[in-house]
Length: 306
Image (cartoon, rainbow, N blue to C red; front, side, top):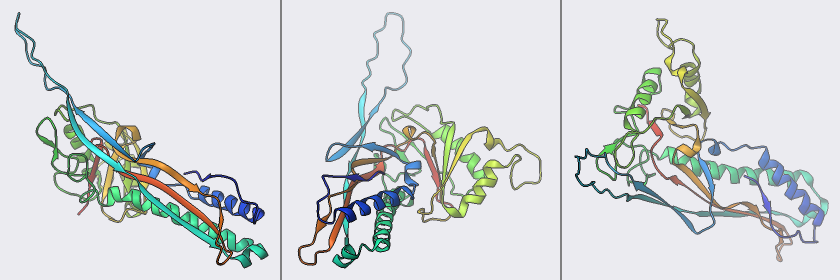
């Protein structure tokens, strides 16, 4: 996220204002975000964003010589509304600090204020995964990770293991098999499975994941079988904001190929500084508007562990 400075800086405390703005920008750059590695970020220019899917046609039937064509209609599928949430706060610098130009105090205020803003965004983004087995819903009305996603054309599909399992070579192999057999369009047809994956995990599973994916031979067994998982392309993202130490998530490495999404209505923005007429404290407001959600469940997969 980039900090945007709106308007012009007032003449009062001009030098201090410029110093605080610089500090806030620098503090934000020092903390690279995690959420944008796994969630597709898009811009929004409206109150909310509505994502619509379509149901393709079913299997094309055989046609006898001279027989009429069977007519099929492309129908509307599921819809998902992304409602933007507004966040905002201000930090104050006392008149005494302004008079004395206490740089260390300004630096600490800026650092922690921007850290707090980033922390909130990270926590909100992680809710898609932390609550992905329960209250965070996909457009079909069930949880993002579910054993019975409703297909608009009829039937169901799943993007969780049939039996929950902790992260291991065996469970990861089964997940890849399930992804190939369960990734379906709303009309029910299978589609080409993804070949490049992101494994999204809490810190508790970092070293387990490294051994599973980067061992030359199959990890954890005595034989010399090749580690077949290395045939696929993997990207490991370790996220300390994931709250379940056993849960693990797979999705397409190409963020345009999965539905985990965020819309930016107003980026993290620093409005012009203000002076509190009662205390003469200088106030530095920051606000943003953003939404998170799942536009479609395909090309995502997970297990809550056991």
